[in-house]
Length: 618
Ligand code: M6R
Image 1 (cartoon, helix red, strand yellow):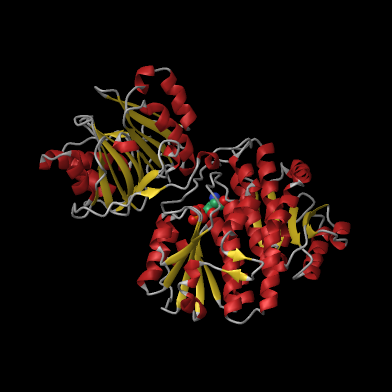
Image 2: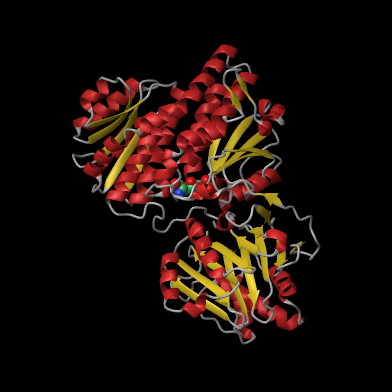
């Protein structure tokens, strides 16, 4: 949560940092702020609201927009309500030091009391204002430079941080540090300029060279000097690794779509191809995945697979439970990372833990990984963001290669996670002798057809939009599915509630009789996934039960279906495929339905209220 960015160099910093903040708004958008150093003093502008509101207020004060050094922040509120005062940047009591911070200082209350006893006063309710004053106090007490003061102060805090700190008395550097929240440093040509950000998106048009700080690392960034990365703990130098960015500008722009979410829904055919590209050789009947191949004995001898994830990634994990058990005959447990980490779970060295996360930064998933590792499990990561904390914390893994997902509601992350998990399940199924060569081969051929089937489905957008216009004003909605499509029902409900704020619940279709059926009347729409394989007849019976109670049925059926068409109020047809691949198709109309309902209701689809893209706090 929260995005930070900064610039130091020869260009005007304001447009770079403001654009960077816009790209980071997926991390939070409760308030925005910027500090520019104009050569004489620090000019701070900040406001409740979005980066657009920040631009609005700086419009009135051009003097606050000039300078070659800046740090900026877009906030997802933790300590203190979203208002102007609690917005970042925060300034120390003397006015000398300025900070932007992503994370939570857990012992801020104790530190604050201590600082108050030494005469410090506070304007805001934030933990960040405590941190900047702690740095100021250390700097005074030790009579040291900013870098040293930051290093000592950070040894006194517990919690998580990604910070950028500036000293108006030594205005030729920005000090950055991280623990638990990401920091990327972009390096300009010949060290003539530097960029700092929560991810690399704010600086991709300026440089491809990047350093990702590891936990408990810090750096003092000065123009014309190489970046030296140090350990916060003891100030020792580390091996600085400069990496080449793979990201390009086109990937993080809307490309003609009205919203990122719509763009990302439409990107799924390509994203899935990118996920299996080079891994699945369908014609040769081969799946190559180095993260699995290098540890194949562990996978083949695993007693159990435990999947840990949150939100949509957890839903992908539930699909994987069906896949691994069905195809590879390995017992699977799927856990909310937030519960798992505090449950004292029983984990052995013969367990494989698979952590799924689009962002690779979700705090609970990261903590679950650390716990599993401490108990001796082998941990495999399925992440989208390359170089993310989870990707680095796991023993091995596979990237989904879906490209940046900017809409807060996950879409292509879900289908590409399922694709990776399918590849692993199929590979293990074959290696364990559970799938014959010919069946394995035919599955690969079928999987290869999925992207074109999704293209076909995307063409029915108009039909889905029409259904959305009929149901956009309902207060509640139910989603039902069975087997592989039960998690899709959960995911459909999550998509609807998070972007349209309509209350929605997903259930296994057969569970309806155990409670939810009481909700059904003529006003309740029920989205039922009723594809022709699996439990078709049983789901048809559920549909009959709903109709007897006058509920409105929106059914997702297989092309050519006759039975459901006669009973349902609306049917959306998906192309025929093998049952295990259906989640990759059935989820598409559910994404479109939520999208259109939210747009028709005038909601902010890409930045729904109260949410943030990566949940880096617990
Ligand atoms: O980055 P992660 O996949 O770890 O994120 C997990 C959840 O926070 C995320 O899926 C969230 O539920 C989305 N907003 C769902 O659309």
